[in-house]
Each structure stands twice: as C-alpha cells, then as structure tokens.
Amino acid sequence: MGFRFVAIPGHRVVAHPQALPSDERLEPELPPMQEAVERALASAEFRDVKAKDRLRALLQGDRPPNLGSPGSGFGPCAVFAQPPQDLPALLRLADELDSMARREAGERALVWKCGECNARYAVPVALVRPVSIRCERCGHGVELNPNRSLGEESLIDPFLGAVNGARHELASFFREAMARGWPVLVATEDTSA
Image 1 (tube, one colour):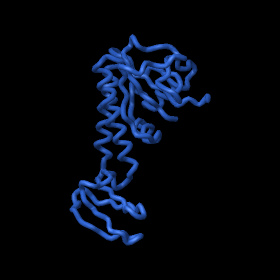
Image 2 (spheres, one colour):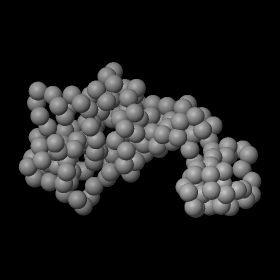
Image 3 (cartoon, rainbow, N blue to C red):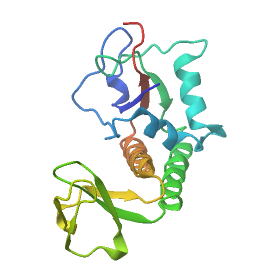
Image 4 (cartoon, rainbow, N blue to C red):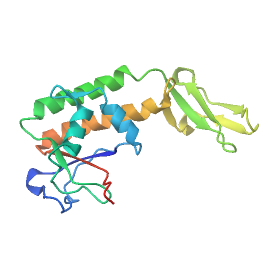
C-alpha cells in the first residue's frame, strides 16, 4: 500500500469527493518506492502505536477516511496528526525517525555504472580516489571520479539508503507541518479504479 502525506491549513481541508487544494500545500519528497516509506515507518511509534499500524487503521478501519483526495490515483485522506494536541507526539516521531536513520546508516559507498554494460561499482567513501578502471564484464573504461558518481548507498543494503532518505524527509515534513500549525493528512492509492 502506497502512502501519500500532505499538510495544508486546517481551513482549506475539504470533504471527499472534492480534491484538496494544490496551492498552499506541503508534501515530503519521498522515494517512488512504496516499500521504502513502509519500511521507514515500520518500527517507529506514534502515540504508543506503531506508526504503520496507525496509518492502516486510519485508512482501512471501520470508519473510512472522509477528507478530500490529495490528487488523482489516491483515495480520500484521513487525519494522521492534528496540532496542537498531536504536536509533542509527532515531534517525538520525527526525532525517532532521524535517530533510526543515523543508527542504521552503516558504512557508505559511492556508486558508479559502466557506460557500456551498466555494471555497478561501489567504493567505500573512505577509500574513494579519482581513478580509471577496466570493467570486469565488458572491458570498457570506467572513471571512478567522486564528482561523477551516481550517489551514495549503504554497503550492506543499498535499499537502506532510500529508507533512511524517507525517514529524514518524513521527519523534516512532520516538523514543518507542526511548525506551521497544519494538520498532517494521509491517503493511500485508490484501488477502486
């Protein structure tokens, strides 16, 4: 299930089937992989309940969500957190997400791809030096220039980089929404189509 978070001023929230206004909106820039967002929230807690379980209860519970949709392809929204009563709990969740990302970061590596066969090469950040190597698959030269890398990944689990990126982005989003005094809404992909 793909979650979509959005925060808008409380007076701009509309009822379903209307769409939420697209101006004056705050959204986190999450990775396109649904699994990254779900895994980012998997062990985090919000008000003594796993955040992922709370989201599912809000979106699939006995009382269906009844607020406007954040956009095409998504169902109606439910309120995940409402200021001021949820401010301390949401800030604790943001802190927890940031500390989980720091704790699970592991050793980082810069990544390059061969221009011919797309073979991937990863070098631990501490060992990176500008050098040219011959691709093990096709023999084409690969420039391991730090300025031309595809980015950083975790050496243990490359997917963990996307998960930790989602954690940091959600934490920042939750803090900004609460600082503005806006409710945090959540929706899921519309499966009725």
